Image (cartoon, helix red, strand yellow):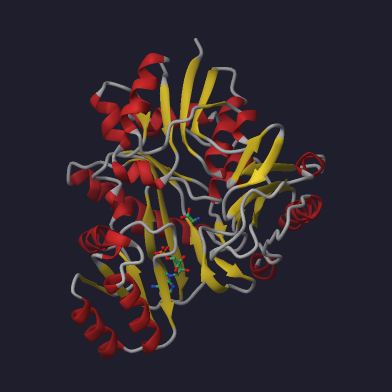
Length: 426
Ligand code: AMP
Ligand code: GLY
């Protein structure tokens, strides 16, 4: 029997998840709330916002949706999982308490301390004067983080004490991230390459995906402001089996086990961002969902039935599952609006997506787009996620970059060095 699915989200991550689910014969209708300018190709757009839980619940009940898949951080951290389960509806989303691993950096840090998970040395502050005093005591470089969600922009790696003072003022006094800055985490600066780990868990057991790597800053060579992510590759060629085992044993397993021991099992996708330091892998943050743009590269490589995996996570049967991946590499390059992550123009027509998808291995997922009268327009900072697969990392990158050249919109911007560091080290 087929199963109808509701995907909740509006980014390229949810586009990629729906695209993957659509390929399965067991999947009936796919609804996407609210979706974006590209998701109508893979599901029926539903104009309900991701935080309108009552409306989403009513919709799922009315349409007899068999599984709801929550993609983005806001609804997951906001408790969409609890809202659906309270109505006896099946949803793939961690509970609200479990999602605090992402929703509160202070909560995540306390858990890491309890579970002995390697992470940067840190202190949590709610008073501006205390935070300032700590920065003066420690000196620079130092990292200041708003504890709550801030669209990936709430973190400042401060090279000088003055920079840290200024950011603390913005976050704690001017409240540029509103309540997300009521509490700040100040931590030691870690050095090393960053990787993304994804582990699908049912609360007790978990399956780890191959490693991936995002490129967080707007500028090439990892310069400039942090963004939601400017491109991803998977797998990361230089990560060894030994390192993976270390990550499994000292990071993922204790996090899952400690959440279970506290009676708040983490059921969903645990995505620790890691810094591979000279002393070994250390956690920078936990996320309670697929990364974006990491989801896009995983969806391109995944061979196993995605619905089967999501259901195993919901039903507690992960230990019975194997996961298979296509050989080779997947990459994605984010095409952004000129100016992002600061101010940028919207409503600019986009051309060339079809031409880009004619290139072998290329699939274009949408993020900040909208569709109106047959025309795709820009509507956000990160506009498109141009993905490609290839036998080698180089082949995949060549295809993605060729595709980016074929796509046109005024002011288009993308980093030209996605995967370049991995190519050099791998
Ligand atoms: P987060 O939102 O915590 O993932 O931080 C965003 C980005 O800031 C990370 O992806 C890192 O590039 C950088 N970052 C965060 N914490 C640290 C740290 N302790 N040392 C160095 N860089 C960091
Ligand atoms: N890849 C960054 C994020 O999803 O948070």
